[in-house]
Amino acid sequence: MRPAARHTGRTALTAAIKLRLDGVEKRFAGSAGEATVAVANLTLDVRQGEFMVIVGPSGCGKTTVLNLLAGLASPTSGRVTIDDRAIVGPGPDRGVMFQDYALFPWRTVVGNVEFGLRYGPAGAGLDARARDERVRRNIELVGLNGSESKYPNQLSGGMRQRVALARLLANEPEVLLMDEPLAALDAQTRIILQDELLRIWGQDRPAAERRTVVFITHAIDEAVFLADRVAVMTTHPGRLKAIIDVPLPRPRGDATRADPQFQALTQHIWGLIRDEAYRATVT
Amino acid sequence: MTALALRDRGQAIGLGAVLPLTIIVAWQVAGMAFGGVRLPLPSKIVAAAATMIASGDLPLAIVQSLGRVFGGFVIAALIAIPLGLAMGTARAVERNVDPVVETFRPIAAIAILPLAILWFGTGTSAAVMIVAYAAFFPIVVNTVAGAKDVNPTLLQAASTMGLSRLATMRTVIVPAALPSILVGLRIALGVGWTAIVAAELAVGAKAGGGGSGGIGQMMFVFYAYSIELNRIIVCMIAVGIVALVLDRALRAAMRALMPWSR
Image (tube, rainbow over the protein chains, first blue to last red):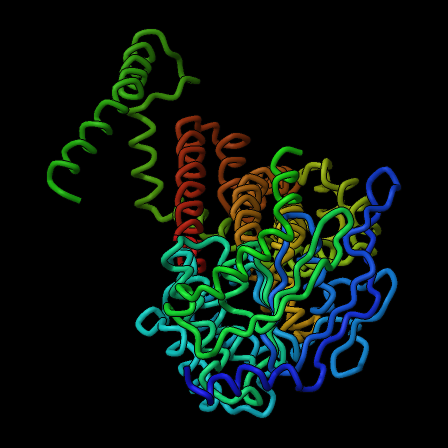
């Protein structure tokens, strides 16, 4: 175990608070006029450069939390802030990777990756050459060289996921919000993209150079593998049940998955949500 | 296409031609046996077609009619597409415009002919107006449907990338609605072509065969003055063939405009 890796793995825990959900509640009005509480009394801080994973069974309000941070939904009560400023709507400082990829089917790989830079504020001040260079670099980063002029419907699920990731990264947002981005992939592709995600996030670099990530998944092993901390949520209504520190050293890789501590953490979190997960399968 | 596939295709066409050919032959035989002067015959139709094409009358009439169709079609598209996009994206616009559109939509294009003639005379402008009116509705209805049917996640993606409303309209809503818009244009072109024949026939009646030109006008002359049934049938067939060619051309254009859907 390299001391440097342990050091960089811990720095995030003392960094400034980037995102904060403070006593947040979110209700949705049902068709019959009754209100459904999606998220209740949720308080959670995410630090600058931290990889925060939210895990929980279906219906625990994970996606609602992400939409609140993205500004795509507003809380019924409580505060949601970035750098201590209230989040009032979506913005290019918070990039979102959607569960169903949300690629523009009429644009090629390049057309999708350059989208935010061409038409949004993220590309302000970039001339065409600088923009093309950044697009090319991000396509390379996710390993899509050679597929630049393909359309999304010509790509496999894993490749589409890479396009969505390259588009997210090309905009260089301060915060990456990712909603079950790997859920639709087969097991092997998933492991490969987990490794790549950590590399792209910057697990080899000092914590100060990393972006802040909020990542949603229902896969506990994925959560433990990726996260600095895992926020465990439960259902009816969606609440925060526990926040688990993941002290596994970085950079992480195949050895991490075989680490007894990795197994123990996975078991522990499974124990926290097992009863509800079982209940969810019979109701 | 391989030689084998080509042969299969040839066979398929051959099989499909059995019934039409039988009907044509029976028509010819029966017509020669029992028909009078008012009965058109396949042999006479072919001869009439050859004369009309050779003289240049038929091609000229088709070109005149097509010019009017395209004119009306372009006017309709320029109004209906922006209006449809506004209706599909802004509730207030839709609530106000939709009742007006739906009130006029069942009124057949030919029913506004009196107004068109009173306002625009019996020439080309009246015919163009009638085509524009007929073509307007399928375009606007399909554009509204396309603009409303945009995948909401794509709109969310655009908003998280900080796009303005105008940029979102141009880069997300319009391309997402494009397949619907093109379907509307395709229907509109067919409807416009149908309307032009009726409009020219009717305008021709009003003008007393005074030569405003076009295929409908040509039919009117054959009907009202020279009473040539074979030539009228030639015009009808020409109308059908032109409609088929227009539709195939527009389909090819649609495929070229939407390379991602191939």
